[in-house]
Length: 327
Ligand SMILES: NC(=O)c1ccc[n+]([C@@H]2O[C@H](COP(=O)([O-])OP(=O)(O)OC[C@H]3O[C@@H](n4cnc5c(N)ncnc54)[C@H](O)[C@@H]3O)[C@@H](O)[C@H]2O)c1
Ligand SMILES: O=c1ccn([C@@H]2O[C@H](COP(=O)(O)OP(=O)(O)O[C@H]3O[C@H](CO)[C@H](O)[C@H](O)[C@H]3O)[C@@H](O)[C@H]2O)c(=O)[nH]1
Image (cartoon, rainbow, N blue to C red; front, top):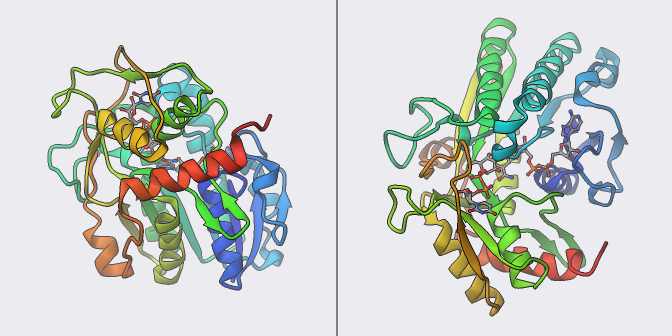
């Protein structure tokens, strides 16, 4: 297939691009590099450096695209509470422009990066796709709006749409000399920050809140290896059906508290990780754990690296070989 990957210079988009190329697809990456990295771009993919809001200039009817995988977004839940306008403009307005371009160019299928953050504080655990959607942060709300637009688009214009609701993505894609991992700047995610502390690059980790209603008072998250997540995109592309908006949660179904995550980082790295309890971060749900039964049943998806030790181990390898000591 000829595919457009928005956000293909980012963490997850670059891993999926690699897998799509290896599977024989032709890939054009649309990424304005606002948070992505030029080094993460696959050399075999064409790169168009424009904002997703201008996708219509690439997605012309003549270009003959068979599908779009849409990763481009701002992703920091905490920041979305203090700069919400950035998130609405980038994640929702940008996605609506992309959907307009997809319709105008008659591109048949679109796979969208949605998120566990659409659920908010869940009333049932593990969370099925049918659970109440009540986001507690702006980031989740901007993504839920796009999910709803895709449902309308599938019904109204026969789009084959798939939303993949990722839980917390971790790890790195390691193949021989190739290593693709997480490099957000500034980093906001728990595991890479804990690794920076383990490496001595940060003095301590701030634990945002220890008074949540969980076993040790810190938030619970469900971690998924980026390689397992990426594979689900290829399965979703194949399963996309005209006129349907399919929605799948992607996680491992096990929750880890933030303190447990830090303990695994200590075990894997063999280094101390000093922590300091800090106030809660605005907008954080207490507990997010996925039911991914639907993805397993309908996409035949099976995680190959479900353990947190695997994820932290691969992230640590990436950190030491590709991040540490580099500017
Ligand atoms: N990382 C996670 O744990 C996680 C969890 C759930 C969902 N997601 C979703 O997965 C997707 C990818 O996340 P990631 O961790 O790879 O993020 P990332 O920041 O590494 O990558 C995002 C990429 O999109 C590009 N981008 C952003 N806005 C753009 C715009 N308007 N026009 C063009 N390019 C733009 C950035 O330059 C970057 O390369 C996002 O949609 C995110 O919401 C991520
Ligand atoms: O320095 C830190 C960083 C994070 N945390 C805590 O660690 C947990 C996980 O936080 P992350 O920022 O790593 O991840 P989030 O759960 O906030 O969000 C991530 O996963 C979501 C889905 O669950 C979204 O999709 C989003 O893109 C992605 O950032 C939260 O309780 C957070 O408060 C800390 O205590 N200290």
